[in-house]
Image (cartoon, rainbow, N blue to C red; front, side, top):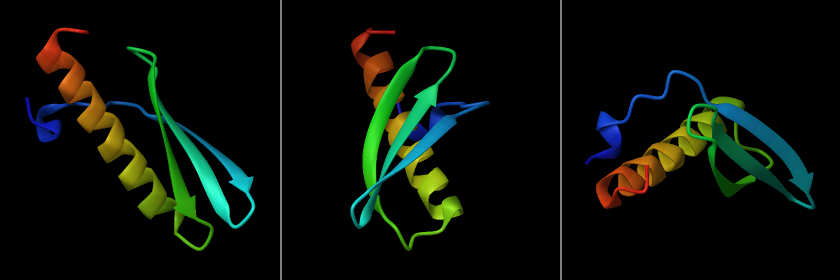
Length: 69
């Protein structure tokens, strides 16, 4: 399954500054699967949201392929 085929109606995003970086957690509220990534402080919120949602879609697609969800 491709991450492009994963539909995410809602993604919860949490930001936490850690030194010169942002720790970003993206959560799918339906499956409760979460991913964590590090982003530069100077990145825009839109860039961060897009990258976090893409990573979450990738993980969900892999879990669907293996039958974990």
